[in-house]
Amino acid sequence: MTPHSLAFYVDVVTTGTLLGVGPADSPGHVTRVLGSDFAENTFGDRSMCRDYGLAEFYWDRASADHPWSGHHFTLQVHRLAYRDRALVNDALRARYGRFTPRLRFEKLQRLLVRRGVPLMEIPEIPVHVPYLRTFWQPDSHVAVSVIGTYGEYSTPDNLRVGDVYSIQAPMTAEEVEWRRARVG
Image (cartoon, rainbow, N blue to C red; front, side, top):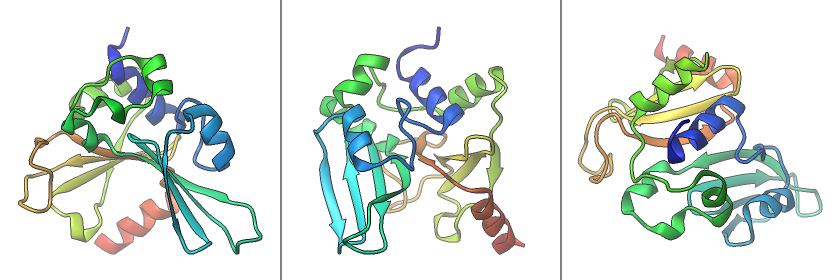
């Protein structure tokens, strides 16, 4: 059995969902699964983010009279290093138990390889080089950002090289190709 929160991360990277909720799901569906304890930020009437602590879901729409369309979700794994027990909501804690303050990429990758779920390193956005490295799972379209090197004001002091910074879904094949084209 995979201990504690490692099973959660393996599930997210393998499926591209969080407790079965995908990035395209409606705000109402996400709230039914994750609960009503969230902070909501809107950017005009066309973009919205709901912050559930560890997870953030993003939506956009063409105008105020159109429905929300799911864009992506991000697991802000780096927030766990602050050891705030309230960060992991009740739904996640009930399913997966205790969450450790850091997620070591090598552990996650080892578990994924055992399950036949490869991660490919892809080029990082130039502003994040060399501080972050990104790995992509092509079947689930999930990206895992990892601390590549320490940089004052560029990486959190409470994380180490090799710690997972965040996990995002989806990252499309088109974005991966765009990143590769920028590198040359």
